[in-house]
Length: 254
Length: 257
Image 1 (spheres, each protein chain N blue to C red):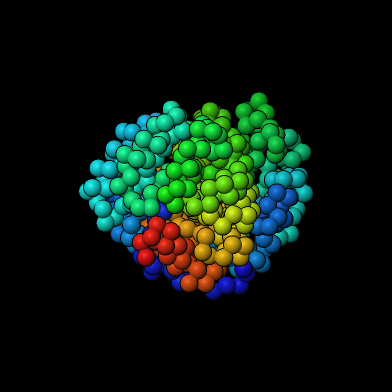
Image 2 (image 1 turned 90 degrees about the horizontal axis):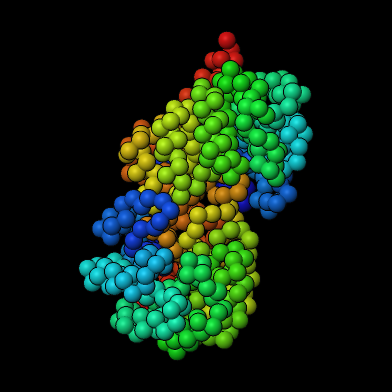
């Protein structure tokens, strides 16, 4: 199985994780898998930054970006703690992409996305029309999808990707409900639970324009989400939008 | 969604003779939107080249084991091998024996059938299942790792298939597989990046059985992972179906004897 559409992948990582081994996770090995599946380019965040150390993590991402600018885009990953560090990181790595690509992980950073220390970061995203990928999970007090409509309305120039679209069936329903109430909220599809019919319901509720493919490579297997999208009962034009066009438009690359 | 043609992008799966170890049948309380009756389930299997499956019944899992087994007997189809619900008490065990089970699915979790898998509670049940070479399906969500280790230790000839182990469990699974040769697991949630091919490269394909979690999940995901794993075609076919057929053939031989 190989995607007939060259894929623009909105959700990937560089690095490892504490709770299970990684396999074939060097950038060169990821590129081999991308070639196998026809993933043209992958937007990556640092796992070191998501788990532990944003400055060092973003530095590592800069190194990967300089080696493979044709295969990776880079998010600047920021933590609301300690206050002030996030804005400094965004300014330091502003050359990663324009508009800025920003990653928040409120679950691992254990701070609610609605909390006051996130406000300067949301304000920066609003002023720069950034694309902000935020980890979400069904009903999570730090990053449940239903927390996002007020943020999206307050910061309307930020384009917010609900990472994993809440993951579970209920999380997807929450993400759809959230996106219906704010036009700058998007569903991003990377996840470990690929419920039957969920993608069809999302497209029916939102249209295909605000649904974006992500693999979560090398955390999750990219073929899993790719197989789901390619076999979904939606029009081929919708699949092309989800797999490629939507994200490229969002980041001003077409 | 029913009655759709086979998926052309996954057509290579037509050659694998897929036998899915992780299917549920019938109505569901919490998953009503996704539950399928037998005709619709078979259509979905056809769409994804799944020739055969092992099916348990949601009525058994969510409501009552004996009523669920009656529903399973009623809803069966020749392409579906029944995974009977099993309880540890004497009356339920006698009822189970009348089914001559080749496969059972036990759900001992507190919010399901709520029993211990330890010998003081379910010893007679597992003794019978081991003697009859039945294949025992257990979702990892229903049993903790130490209990799985104890069960496999106490009944070393019992064929156990762990379902839904997730993708974060290699540090538990690998030592258990090494300790217990009759332990297997299904692929439905074994979905980390290149995890399947890394496993096969190190351990071989014999202990992994294809699972989809139909009707909850789309089979497209687990088939796509198997299709794109950089493993040999013989390993792919072993995982897709022949490993499970080998386990069931042993059970069949014992029952015939």
